[in-house]
Image (cartoon, rainbow, N blue to C red; front, side):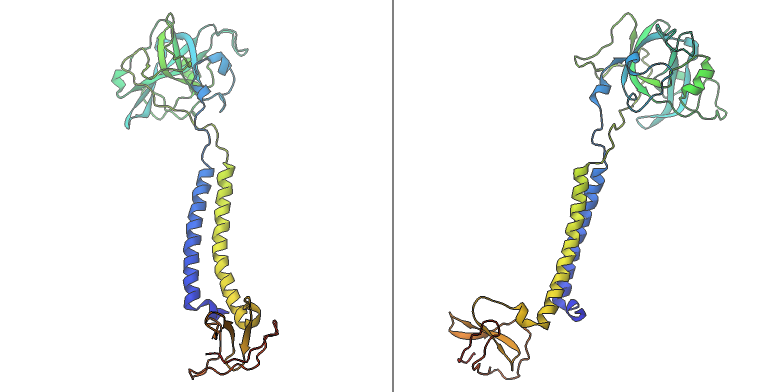
Length: 331
């Protein structure tokens, strides 16, 4: 069987089978990769502007379901609260986030942990230089932006006064000495409280909205994927391609096995419709061709060929299965 497996025809068959199997494995890997991609990359409902109270309550933790919602808040900035967060990028340029404390309107008594008003950190925008930090508006405002989960507090490693290493409400509550919501808002629009936010008919913020201070650039923050479940259809296709790859190699093994068994018992593995017979001397089957009116050997049948071109007469040879006999001479 090893001799058959190493024959030129078998090796050629094996090469083609391995190439096909490798292609199927590549297709399987592609489907497997696709199955892990998020099936929903954005939730349209989170782009609809909603009151902050409809998304999160004071003292609640920002969860994946509440994060990334666009919220609307009315309140007043504390002018002395503005801090900057260094190391923030905008279009590849290094700069700062400008963060201010917004005291939420009518928030007193909403949280049993405090009787006073509650504030929320607002990242109003990005600047490229610390010398360009604008003051927050002093009059009441309405802010709309994306609600985001808090960043982890970091050690203040010799940063100048007014700078913090991360945007952490847990850290800012001590800096500002005020009770804060657990998350923060990345502002996208800011108008005086007496005005109405510019929203579309779908309730979303139109492109081009900005905060009241023209020096600040809008933060580049998009929704995070909301569904990272496996795509079962892609997973099924990945398994299917692996089965096809195994079947390609199986076909080669079956070819080698059948060739071996055929040589072991030719009579069993060569059966055609009609009469065919066995030549003991030639060790080969032959059959009668009605069209040519003569006998032929099976060319691909192993046989002990004689050195002579003449083929012996086939006299009264009987096939064991058919019981037929012929008295003619084959070519």
